[in-house]
Image (cartoon, rainbow, N blue to C red; front, side):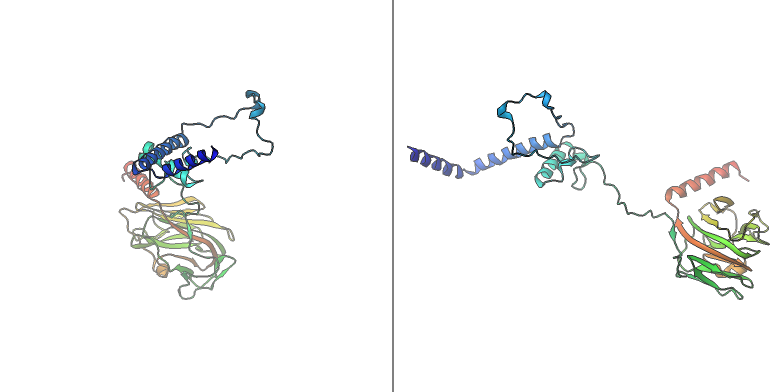
Length: 333
């Protein structure tokens, strides 16, 4: 009798293995339907996890108690700040497939590049700002710079992270050999006067195709301004100002060129705010060797460090142009 039953079971198993194409198709459709149902239940953000029941809320019978040798299962922590859909995208390939099926059906407008999550990925943490200041002096050598032969210039050397320009008969300085923008950029550095009574951080830079110089401590050590504006130098034009400088004191110098203005700062105090439109810019002949970007002294010893440059962002350019237009309307003459 037992042998007869076993033979019948083996016969039924062989019949099941010989299913026709229609049976396999029906089985595949059933499995797909099960996947869709499971994917909708697993991935839907609206489905919340069932709260854990405390022992006081449940009355267990002796038969329901778990075997003493069985260890409690550990739950994986849920991902932070992600939809429930995303929590099933990573552990296993099957769960990822189910999640994508659900997203195709329910979140098709948000599907991007094979991702089932609606949120865009965060930018890489190490991505640098293209408009941030970048050093153009390495603090160790004059790489990217040269010391022009003005005639009678003092010694130029690098020590302790700064460029030291010794006092010469006339001008002593350094000139940048790299590329300098014509507009919408900033240059900044720190400078100190070590000895002497004339300019110690005079900066020549580009304004469009023309050169221009920001004089720092000229004409006896106190004059600040642009040379030249409409053929007048810093001691005799609308940018002329006076500022007291102390020896062996660091001052931060910053030059900003936009399409509308030339602005110069000393320790974040705006010293020059010159409109470009309608004015002619050039330099004195003594500063010719400082083009396109240079820092120089006159019968004075000085040190400079932390020389940096950057281009302005589109938002900064737009804001600068809007500010200039507003000022032009308020002060037409």
